[in-house]
Image: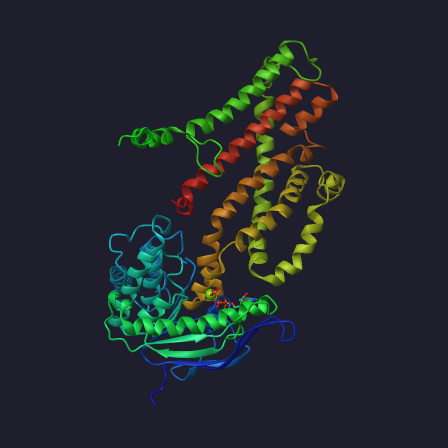
Length: 271
Length: 284
Ligand SMILES: Nc1ncnc2c1ncn2[C@@H]1O[C@H](COP(=O)(O)OP(=O)(O)OP(=O)(O)O)[C@@H](O)[C@H]1O
Ligand SMILES: [Mg+2]
């Protein structure tokens, strides 16, 4: 079998001490194939961000390991780009500088950097906004700059933590199509966290559903819809059936976690 | 069928938006109000205080000993200016303020930045700083004389103590407000901790730090009288203490107002430079 691009093996993590701490991930294993687009969905607080941060090398897991191209991850690295859920542009820099900042550690000449920056700003459709400051941009535009910044140094893996979570439905739809276009063009491996099931199916080759905290991979859904995908696909019978199955799976977990919170007072827990 | 309610609706339709647009909500929560109203309110309030003061003093309701008339205060200012005392005092005091605040800031910024970034250093220093912070500065005057003599060094020391221990905690908080995700971006781009500190944390916290400068320089001004309490030949604070001995109320009040005025000027200096330097913080 072909070696996977990213492999997560028997990963467990908790915050605080083992005795009084909070178990967040419990024996998670998954793998992303080269150029695969995989979404992770799950109830709020199940550990999605923690999982992503561990793969990014920002958190040291308590147990288990992460491999990229077969080599263990020991910290953050430029082989993995990250787009965060919050707006993380540097507000004191105009768009161009924000994107160029990502090239600080690259060996490019000034000229090459400028060309790369211009290219990626154009890719995310922000030509003409090079000198705008983040406070002059809408939320969608800011996330596009963040995507350009994560792509400009050409990482092999792109990790995205609910990048469109704060956007309205219209903007979101446009961003999804834009991201798919970029992905089809650049052919990188993407792990995409979301709690929007439509979004997950529309974008992905595979959708992983996590259990309630402590998170594990509960079930995996292959999305065998043809690409390139257009928005109309969301009303096709295959899409709707898949969505139904995934929503049901998440619902079970949501009920479980609510039952836990309410001391088992909620009916229907576990299903 | 023609009913009157229908006609009313039709008639009121276009009329109500016009009425709404004209209604200025002066007390809406956290909403902007017209600039003119804003300025009028501020100057109006000062004018009202002046009027009340004038009525109380010119009307003879309050004795000169407790509260002199506005003209007596102005006369006192003119007198001090003509005799050269005012400029000499102001120069001495401003010098002390600037040096005292500058030294405090020079220490507070690096230490505050370290405390805000490294829990170990915060844990090391915060209990001590908190302890000193609550010590009354006036009570430290005798000690400062013992340590630093009776020259300007002692004044610097008082102003330093009054400013530094507050400022360092504010700087620490400024640094801590930098969102953690910005720091994480730095890590994912392969930056070292030092580079993240220099290229992300410092610029991100600068607007807050600038505001801390504004606030703490104000506090330094408030410690001026304490600094010039003992063994000062000149200075605005010194003049006030001296006036107390002769019950020269107009001299006291003039001094207070003048210090307040100078404080206001420095405040506006930081405010105006701040809005100019940090335009990028304004959310549309
Ligand atoms: N640094 C931390 N220290 C302690 N607890 C933490 C820390 N970070 C996260 N947690 C807890 O771990 C759990 C999982 O957090 P995580 O952010 O991974 O969830 P999530 O699945 O991304 O949720 P959401 O969908 O709301 O973003 C939560 O209960 C959270 O409170
Ligand atoms: Mg999250």
